[in-house]
Image (tube, rainbow, N blue to C red; front, side, top):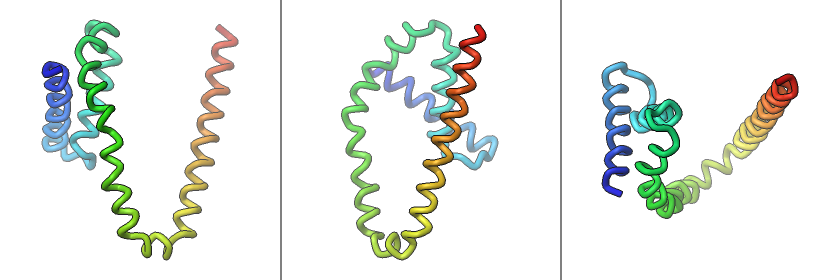
Length: 119
């Protein structure tokens, strides 16, 4: 478990250093997460490396994930009057983004199914 936590922390620190050096307009942990995803996809030992190294910490952290929604929920309640003042814009943004997501997903699925049929 400690080894897998070390791997996660190393990737988070690497993301922070990369952001500090390159001045990317992204949070360091997000860049670290992308680096971790790339390492998992093109990693040296494939699936076995993923399971052996990261599974213990991933399982432990997933149990705690619901706790991260508490601050967001409190923030929504704290700013409820502001949200109600802009409910139209929020609803439009949600509907447009949901429709765009559905459209892109459908187009991607269609493209992948065509490619699979040709193979």
